[in-house]
Image (cartoon, rainbow, N blue to C red; front, side, top):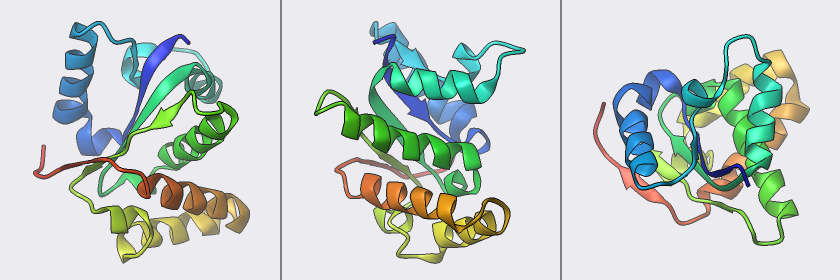
Length: 151
């Protein structure tokens, strides 16, 4: 495995303070962490690099925030995390972090994520959005951490 941890987050929501601090703390402890602005190089195709990093990671930490579901990339990452963990036969895990959202938001029991997904359905079609919905609901059923407060 190239990375021990993959941080999935929506940049405008948590990158500047929370995610960067979490990343620095993990790196200082000797953990190999994937964070997009630290690992992706200028000129490389984002999609291929991200999907390969997900394949090469042992633990996924999606940082669910208010705007997470508005990002197609975040949704694709979560969907790919589910695929990777299913194929890993217990060797990979997803540890969700709920940053100013509730697990119920991510499980699509409130309008917060449902509204974002309905906007995506218009652009990307219902099949892809159904995969994203299933991935969100699956990840939100796992025990995770809650973080209150804005950046």
